[in-house]
Length: 247
Image (cartoon, rainbow, N blue to C red):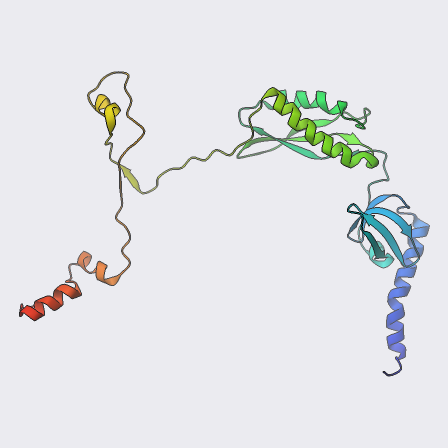
């Protein structure tokens, strides 16, 4: 191994010095502090230590992660502990048959009963969007950062219990299948079809109908020959063997 050059030594110290300078800025500017819940350097969790070269963050699955201070300062920092309260964003799908005003009223009455939901801000329950299943409600209670996941889980449970008590149907997609390319013949079968054909009032044809489909697609040259008026190869060979003239 050779002796490292001054350029190599300078490149090695360049990253260290950038982390050191970023760490000094973090300590002076105080963008976050120990015990804050943040997203910094693409890592989300609770800050455990702020050093001169890196910041230690414990993720929600209890993994200690050390992020270089230069990466922390170069990216976006989101501090969830800066404000006193935090909003929990949830969605509650509704079936087409459910009246959204009634569902919203019931949720507004149930959400304040959840432990650690702050009474200073009333929960927001409004129509967020529409899809093929029906309406989607935005359910947004408020709580402190320390109780975020507890309120998150209890709010989901409250939505399920509230809708289950009333008997709201589950939001389902409705599919309408149509036969494209099939021709209805109008032929009915069974006693219902005979009564309908006889003109007896109050009778309806049975749901079963006979369909006449288009002929299947022909994909071989041998099968395509008869459609164009030509003679198939097997017929042609038999005629030649019998001495039949071929036009």
